[in-house]
Length: 318
Image (cartoon, rainbow, N blue to C red):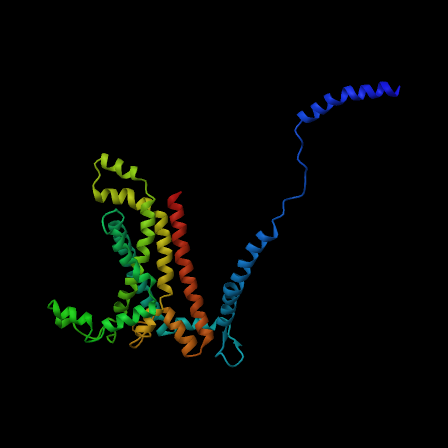
């Protein structure tokens, strides 16, 4: 009996093993996959650094904007008194007006200049790398060093007045930074000198991503150079325009180095920006509550303008 059963098992064994081998093994079900400790560390460490260096100071700044604090005595709660104070502050209104002028001129000229340089430098020709490096070189300079260099150029006996005399415009000579009617516009020039190179690089990257077949099809249809630019280049640069606008608005609202190094908002607050007025209020006049309120106003302005533009751009793309 045992021998028969053994022989049956022996004969059935290989066949059973073959059938078992032919069946695909079902994967073992386990719980949801857990990320490795290394992945968790790569996520949590930057989040912790960002929280300590950005989020927590921002929350503290908003709290300080609700108080009256000189940095020495304990702060006293003032509610939204610092924000209502802005509406009756003539210097704030002048700084807001100058910031709007700075945003329009600095933003418009840097975008137009950067796009123009990118269109000129996108074609490969002999020595083009030298021109690209020359236009991008001011970006790597410190803004303070740039401002000090232009301060020398704007001196009464500096290069700017010398060039004006050389071309027969000697009656235009005057102290550019000491004149309240020209101080703000004179400071836009060194800021543009640096910003155009940065915007140029952004537009160069966008132009390299345009399919050349689009231009070939436009040429076949008889489109002129202006029509190609309007109907092919500009629509293809829509995403780059959103980035450029965001960068320009942020740089405009935080423009501080050039103005503070040249005039510190003077003469007589004629070139006062929101950023310089915020710094002067907080760290020169030691009115940290009102200074933090100005910082919150700058953030709200930048965030509102950028978000409104992005929403409109996304609606147009859809």
